[in-house]
Figure (cartoon, rainbow, N blue to C red):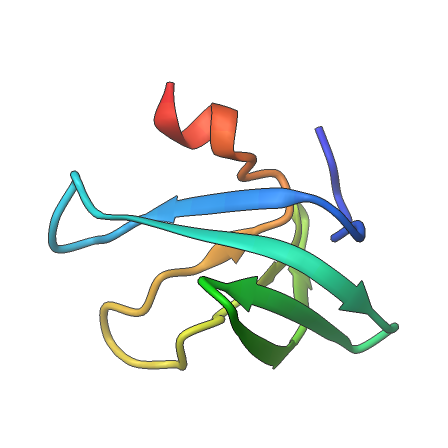
Length: 80
């Protein structure tokens, strides 16, 4: 299980409002505090947060039902 974002990772997270909606991201680059994600051709640079489960971020903004993307949320783990 990954605890840090790595360049080249393909990550996914399900929508809280619609289980069939899956957001997919690819890690393009990272620094100590930021990760840059490719979201369907659009680059998103967001701050990295961490807890006991590892790193995570809010790639689409921080609002009540915003998707939280964890570094361990690989496409295979979410879609299986």
